[in-house]
Image 1 (tube, each protein chain N blue to C red):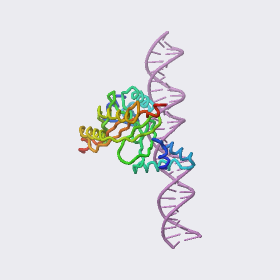
Image 2: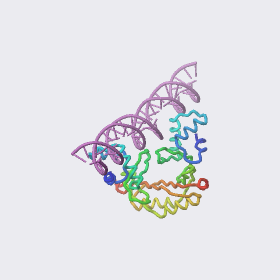
Image 3: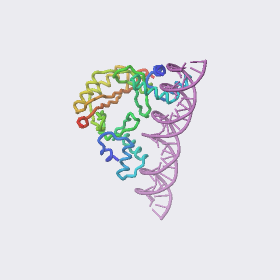
Image 4: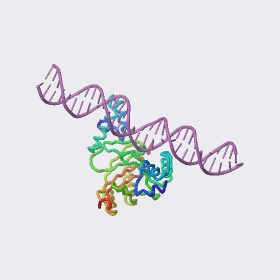
Length: 117
Length: 117
DNA sequence: GTATAGAGTGAGAATCACTATCGATAGTGC
DNA sequence: GCACTATCGATAGTGATTCTCACTCTATAC
């Protein structure tokens, strides 16, 4: 399961993971895929986000707070950390009287490999 | 339709908008709500995001690029602009060889009114 | 004033991702 | 070997969204 996630370059949808497992000869059920993915997401071993189509996308991640730079063409994702944004988000929240502030940041673009053709 | 969106303090789900319209005596169909919302989103008159439950949330927005500071308790949303993040996102994209870079940023927290009780 | 074409609408069916349930099976301790 | 438990896969169910289609309303031509 984790191996399958590792094999993917970027984000993979639950549907895609299920299909890939079946294709590789593992007759795993939809329910199991969702169960395992939810557990992994709970324990912070994978990142879970919703895409525009409403599908849940999972990705093998290093633990800890970070953001992603995602290629819109191939789905490859680069992990990004920045004290700048963390500080900015905190400040914006505080300036508006918000408490318990957290944030989501995603950067999209076309990676050099895809841009090259 | 726009008036109904304007009446909401923050984000409103398609379901909620539909319910509110029906409640206010406008026997509008689900299909129409989604049609209009999609059109409005296409023309940039409303912002469309997906929440964790996979529902589409719509919000009346000022046109142009900006981000939101959203109260997790009441849903109230404050529009936020910052050259800092724009610059940072561009830089991160460029540093990793990405082109056509854009980004999504959402900040969450509890607003002072909700924190007060 | 009447007929017709066209766009827009609402109700309900269909679809899709996801979740809950349930019976079957494998594993464990006695 | 037997009873119990945990886990799994299949399947039915759920809820949001989209599609379909018949209907209505408006504008235009006659």
